[in-house]
Image (tube, rainbow, N blue to C red; front, side, top):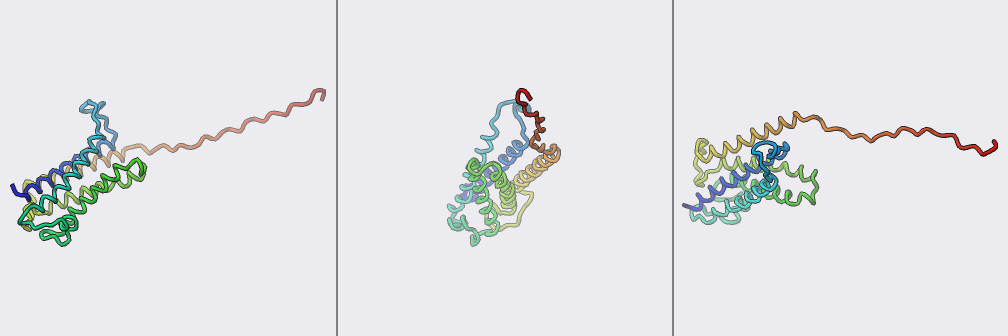
Length: 207
């Protein structure tokens, strides 16, 4: 097995982990309770969500580094970090680099969500959808053999990437429908105290 093939498998593994991470995040966002609902077991979805992100980031690091061990690809570390002038598919690899940097941003900001505050972290966390889009587009457009061959959208690997993309789109659609069906949040207004009745001042004795 060549280094390019190992790199391709690592990319698919990272994409699988990222897809799982997004799906678990969508489940968490609708307040799904695995104890009350299927599978009726106590599952720490928050922990699984975090660890799938950490492992996906680690595998995403390994994915391009493996190419540097190929004698035919002729990629250097600079081509991995800044693939604008890469020897093969430079702009497609730019999308891959942007996907990796975006994933690192999501993981790091999630790790420091306590310091950032929930509101700011939640806003930054929407970057995950852009990260997934970059990963999927990179996976669909790239030639896994780095030979600039025409894209075969019916290839087994491409179909797998396309199914991952379709799954996330459908799940996000269900998440949006759930959000639209939620009642508007209640507005808590401060209570207005009723004025206390005034009592007449006491009169002095003998008056």
